[in-house]
Image 1 (cartoon, rainbow, N blue to C red):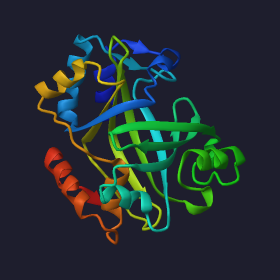
Image 2: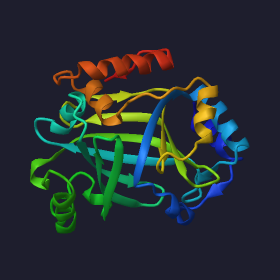
Image 3: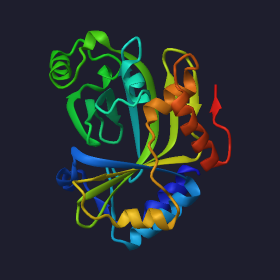
Length: 262
């Protein structure tokens, strides 16, 4: 799908501003991920409009570019914790919200009840690849994760376009990621997910969700998928990744083509 088609699809959806979104942060939340393709996404967006959802508009845009850099230990402990089904785990990344010019160091922690908490501190965009010289960021990492800045290296980047929807009651947020591109700094390999779409439904507690019904109507089912883990699996054949190769095949089935790695 080209960008013009996607922008046309979200144009009729009423906007919500970043300021209004402050009440929908859902930093302590339950996340459910879904996988679909761009053709189905257009139908989902049409139904979201009818259901009263609003779309985040930032910098005059309803489709926003995001850049992330994932950090890990030399032995890829965070990747392997996920692969080995460790229930309590963490991921560390920097993320640039391109439309607003803001960048953050973000720490995602998952507990053994399936709840995700995200902590973050603002950094300079120039620190996306290396925040070790930022004392506040280093202290924040040490205080909210198992890791220190000296233990971590940038492993890979993800670039994608995101649409963010909010339900009328503001009890859920839906992020829709398209045009996903991965670059592995360790191997130099790149991979694109073509027209695959990763949707993440983020709810406060177990509040009701009209979007779950919309997705079910379009046969879009929940799937456990991590952009970081899929990216490593695609771009680094040397790592233990058998569990995630099944996910790669699921994505290829969804888009009806083989993922290209260069």
